Image (cartoon, rainbow, N blue to C red):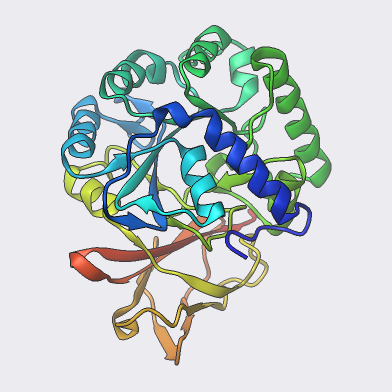
Length: 350
C-alpha cells in the first residue's frame, strides 16, 4: 500500500484525513504543468538572519537566493498537505514539486521569512512546540502571530509541547506531552494539527507508532531524501538548510533530487541497539545503474557497500557516537539529477 505507516491507523481513514487536509489549502494550488511525477522535495528551515546560531540559521541573502531559484527554476511550490494527499491517492504531482517547512516558530519566521514568502506567494508549513510559545520565550512567536499565519492559509503542525528528545523519553512522558500540546493547539487555534515533526528528527519504532496513534497523518524527520508515494509516512525525509548547507548549488541539487525507492530496510528501528548497525535495503527493480549507488556516513565518510542483486548491504566499520547520526545513499538519475535515500539513527547516551 502506498505510504503504509502502521496498523494503528487504517488506510481508508488516513486517505480521508489527508484528502480533507489537502482540500483545506486548495486555494494555494496553481495549475499543474504538462510534466508529472509521484514525488516531492521537502525543505526544512529554522531561523532567518540570526547569525549567532549558524547551525540552525539561514542568512537572508541565502534565503532570498532560494526564493529566486524557486520562482525562476521551473519548480512548483505547493502546500505540504496537498502534496501528501496527492501521493496517498495516487494522483500525479507536477515535476519538481517543492514543499517548504519551518521548525520551532522563532520570531524571525514572522519578521523575516513570512513577508518574503507572502510576497512570493509560496505556501509553507510551520511546526510549533507549544511550551516555548506559552512561556513567552524571547525570540519566539506568540499565539496571535501564529493565528495570523493560520488565518492566511499557512499549515500549522506540531512539534510536541517541550520539544522533547522523544527517542530518549519514556512512552508515558511522550504520550502526556503530545496530549498537552494537542490541547493547547485546540485551545488557541480551534483544532489539533494533522502533521508532525520529530524534534531533532529523533524517532524510534515506539515513538512513530505513538505519533500515528495520536491522530497525526504524517510525520517528518530531519534526514535527507525525497518524499514519494511508497515512502513511510510515519518518518518522511526533509532536506535541512542552514548557513553551512544553504549555498545555492547545494539548494539546487536537493531541489532537483529524485526518490531512490527502497524496501525491506534494516534495522527497522531508528533507535539502535546494535552499534554499528547491519544497515541494508532492497532497491526497486525499476531502477538501473545500481552499481553506481554509494552511501556515506555523517562521521565516517564513504561506507563499504555490498550488492547482492537488488539487495544492498552497508557496513560501517566503526560504532556510531551517542546521539543522532545519518547515512545518505545516492545514485545517478535521469536528466543529470540524483536519486537520494537517507536515514537518521539514534544512539542513546550512556
